[in-house]
Length: 64
Image 1: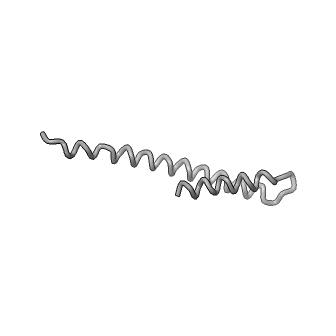
Image 2: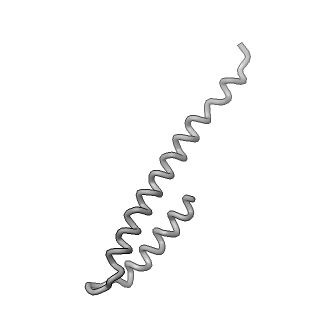
């Protein structure tokens, strides 16, 4: 899913690279860029916190 967000970022940047003052797709690519960036950062944040929460499973195997 993170790769999908990166692909959307690349597609939005590709559309923006051809945008000029009268391009009708410029605002659409800005919206796609904004939401895909938010999705990517939220995905990375959730993935990081999931790894942090699951990293303390080793303490359950310790013998008293």
